[in-house]
Length: 303
Image (tube, rainbow, N blue to C red; front, side, top):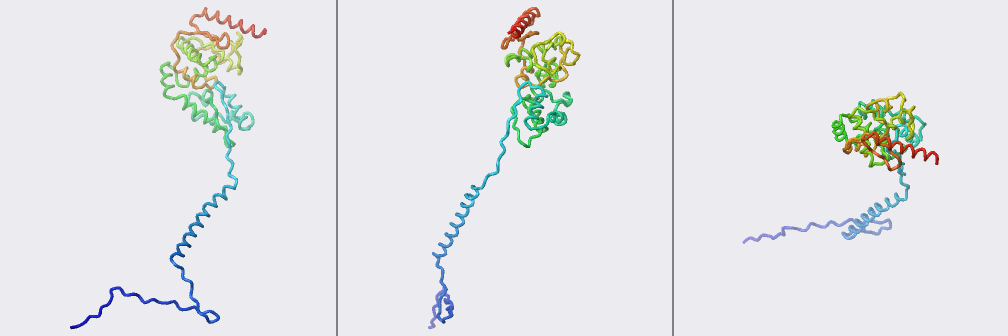
């Protein structure tokens, strides 16, 4: 019978001891051995140190002054203002010499204007409140106004409304500018627009004081017989049809009235006193209203 010597499948590897370290005095020392628990403690300490640094850095940065953010100023363009008034307001707002914005107007806005406007932005400088920064230029501000007018008027609706009345969209802006200048209250805008359309349909002269005032660069409700003989394409007392350009910059309500005026046969109107505008289709009745208006004006001047 033979005997096999049993050997374990997993022998223990011989343990290699570290060589003792000899000091200068001849004594032997062993290097300290880091235990598993020690390694874990060191690792946790390192993580906490990194986290503390990550928190500390933002706290330190918060003490540094943040870059100043410029607060925009507001430029208010009221409804009905003429282009000249808008140019002057932009010059003042941007601190520019008088006439700077006017000189930049045609070149800045021409690409965004309809061909009929012939580069004249009158009527398309949409009345609104605009933000102004130190980096704002007249060109950028005027283009913004024209772009706003194009969006707010709505080309589709204006085009359809104009076509239904035998006008172009640009002519509808002209009508809206007259409505804006003539109407005493927002509620009167629709009726004023209806008077304009009725007169155009009949081939009658519009006879609007507002167009004469535009030609004479003034604002007044007093029109003389001499004024009505003015030789100007804006003299709608002597010339039929619309003036060649808008006479101001209308807002949305005036544009809506020009496109969708109420039904009515009115051909005449006069504002006898603030809040009292009288519309009629009868000329004799209109003359009575005008007489009352003249009496009110004389009393106001005498007082």
